[in-house]
Every structure is written in C-alpha cells, then in structure tokens.
Amino acid sequence: MSKTNGEKRIRVALLGCGVVGSAVARMLIESADDLRSRIGAPVELVGIAVRRLAKDRTDLPVPADLFTTDAAELVTRADIVVEVIGGIEPARSLLLSAMKHGASVVTANKALLAEDGPTLYAAADAAGVDLYFEAAVAGAIPILRPMRESLAGDDVRKVLGIVNGTTNFVLDKMDTTGAGFEETVAQAQALGYAEADPTADVEGFDAAAKAALLASLAFHTRVTGADVFREGISDVTAADIAAAKAMDCVVKLLAICERTTGADGIEGVSVRVHPAMIPRTHPLASVRDAYNAVFVEARAAGQLMFYGRGAGGDPTASAVLGDLVAIARHQVAGGRGPGESAYADLPILDVGQSLTRYHLSLDVEDRPGVLAQVAQAFADTDVSIETVRQHIRTNAGTGAKRANLVIVTHTATEAALAATVDALSETDCVAEVVSVMRVEGA
Ligand SMILES: NC(=O)c1ccc[n+]([C@@H]2O[C@H](COP(=O)([O-])OP(=O)(O)OC[C@H]3O[C@@H](n4cnc5c(N)ncnc54)[C@H](O)[C@@H]3O)[C@@H](O)[C@H]2O)c1
Ligand SMILES: N[C@@H](CCO)C(=O)O
Ligand code: NA
Image (cartoon, rainbow, N blue to C red):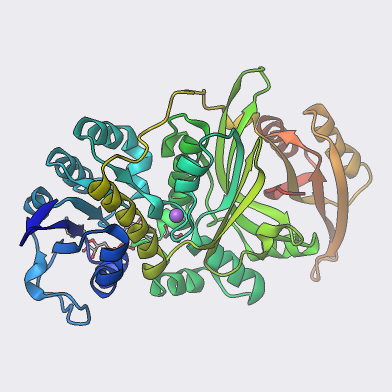
C-alpha cells in the first residue's frame, strides 16, 4: 500500500481490457466509494495494460492516460494486479513479476492455473502475497472460496457440474429450438460467453481446466488440465439430442470429479469432462442458456448446489471484485488467504476405471439372430444390458429393411464399454455403431 496525504490507498493494476477487463474497470470506478467503505482504504486504479492504445474506449469511465501497453512496468507499481488477458504467456511472466514485486494477484485465467498453478502458488508463498481466482471457475458463482474455505473442514467426495456457459447455451438451443451448431456458437460469441477461440469451449478444454481446478481444491491433490479425460460437444448431433428426448433426457457437457476407489482397490481421483444424457427430472437438466451449476457432495455437509452465471463480462467481474476486496482487506488488516493445499497427493485414476451407464445406437441388419449376436458382444465383454428398443426402417428405393437398435446398459466401466464397442464393430450384422453416449444422474 502507498500513502497519499497520509491516507493509505490500494493501488490496482489491471492487465487486459476485453470483455472481463472492461467490466472490472467500470465497477472499480463506479463503486469506488462503496469499495473504500468495505475495505477501509480507497482503491486506486493506477493503470490498465492493453495491446493497442488506438482502440476507442471512450465508453469506459476511465481517464485515457491510465492506458498503457507496458504491462511489465505496470505490474511493478501495484498492490494488487488483476490479470484478465488470458492464455499462458505473457500472463504467467507478468503475474510472477507482480508477485516478486510484492503485489497480490487476482486472475480469471483457468488455462494458466490448470497448466501451471503450482508455480504461481509457490511464487505467492515466496513473496507472502495472495493468489485468488474465483472468476476462473463458473464465473460469478462463488465455488472456489467455498471449496478453499467453507468446506475446508469437511471431506469432499464428488463435484458434478455444468461449468461451461457456451456449450450449455449451444446444447440448450439445439434442444429447444432445433437451431444448428455453428449458428448457436456464433451467438454465444456475440454475447461474450465464448472464448476468443471457441475451440476451447466446444472441445471441452475450458471445462477440463475448470474441472482440474475444482478437483485440486476438492481433493487436496494437484490435478492439471492434461490429467482430465476430455470429450467436447462437436460430435453431438441432432440425432443424439432426439435420442435423449426419446429417453426423456437432455444432453449436457458435464465436469465430473470423484474421489473413488478404482478396480485395483487403490483410492484416487477421477476427473472427466464429456457430454452425457441426464434425465429431465435431474436438477442439472433445468440449467438453461449460458448458466452454470455445480453440485458438491461432502461427507458431513451432504449435497450442496451452486447455481448462477458462469460467463459474461459483468458476472465474471463480480467474482474478480470479490477477490479484490478480500485481498485488499488482508492488506489493510494483515494476514493472507489460503495457499495451495495438495497434501493428500492422491493418484489420478485412469478413465478406463470410471463407471457409468451408456446409450448406444446401432445400425444393424434386419434378419433372424441379429439380436442374439449383438447381445453376445455385450455378454462377452461383461456389460449388462438394461433396455433395448428397435425401429425398422425400409429403404424407399430397394424395399430392403434395416434396424436401428437403441441399447442402454447398466453401470459398466469405460474400459469394458470400449471392449463392447470393439466387439460390436467386428460383429458382421452390425453395419455401424452410430453413437455412444454416457448416461449420468439416473
Ligand atoms: N468472458 C468470460 O465470460 C470469462 C469468464 C470467466 C473467465 N474468463 C477468463 O478471463 C480472461 C479474459 O477473458 P475475456 O473474455 O475478457 O477475453 P478478451 O479476449 O475479451 O480480453 C482479453 C484482452 O486482453 C488483451 N491482451 C492480450 N494480450 C495482452 C497483453 N500482452 N497486454 C495487454 N493486453 C493484452 C486483448 O487485447 C483483449 O482485449 C481469460 O482468462 C478468460 O478465460 C472469461
Ligand atoms: N467461455 C467460458 C467463459 C467462462 O469461463 C464459458 O463459456 O463458460
Ligand atoms: Na466462480
């Protein structure tokens, strides 16, 4: 902290002035009086690092001379550095330099934290400063601080969530309006939900980074984005959405983090992100639009649910400002927030050991013995069938008949199901395994 006219003030440097950064700048300026009262000292925005000075930012209530392209210099003269640039570099170097110069850090950068969080925690420890990142997971929803603080005395067993607004928006629109995939992704981008490169959202990288952060905090174990089994939604078709509807289900991109015992008897952490069918009666099915929701199951607390806006400038800025106030209070009153907690150091379980139910759609011949052959492929690979439905289709030209078989399994391991799919592909009456989707929450 520095002093002006004998009054302590907290100098804030903002790195990045995009969707989130501009909302943070606006809130810092417009709520200055309230923030001062809540913190016990005034907060002064001392600079905003941008890539181009020439851009028109006259809509922001910020003096033009606060903008700079020299982020490296800016981080050396702040008490709190807020990073909303995104990406690995230069964000990481800037944050490490900020901490070295004594600043605490607020970041919304899940990609960086999921790749190299321990380096940032170590730098925060070495400098005796705070590292807060509530905005990095599920935007406005308070979920990381509840995990780091409120649940610190409990034993978290499972975290199940919808943590990507863009994909939820896309899947919801596909379900309710029948709109196409590309069209809804473009809409999500225009609304400020999607990342600059929507691949990160659509292919599940964004959700995987968030799952890694949630699992690390929940299970006191280092989990990186690369440890997370990941499938995105780009292969989800209108037929999958219709198949889910026929089962009274919806398709959601889920992040699933579990502390569980694998088939080999070893306790570990299972973290996966993939699309799954969930029953329409499940609370997560009613998470619409770009909203996010996270379920937490803890031994003593039981089930908890966190719900709200997971993306967008203002909601994300709300989480950033919350962190900023927490840190500023520490700077006024002394003390630090929690650092890294990775003492449990549990192994990351292979995805092959995770258990779920599956929905399979098969294109098969329509002749005697087909069902028996298909059932044999399941029996041989130790996967138990729960239901089978068959629809006969007649080719209008040739009159030839084919069947579409829809099979839902009982709970099976991912490894066993993969073996079933291999066996089906080698069964001569099966023309194609059209789709395989996991079924959760039933
Ligand atoms: N948009 C959201 O809903 C949301 C929600 C939660 C977290 N986040 C995270 O917040 C961060 C920012 O996201 P965003 O949506 O505001 O992105 P954005 O692309 O709108 O903004 C990033 C800004 O940083 C600027 N920038 C890039 N490199 C820079 C540099 N070296 N110096 C100065 N400025 C630089 C870019 O020009 C851009 O204006 C990301 O880490 C993102 O994952 C975003
Ligand atoms: N692109 C992200 C922003 C929030 O991290 C989403 O769609 O949820
Ligand atoms: Na959050």
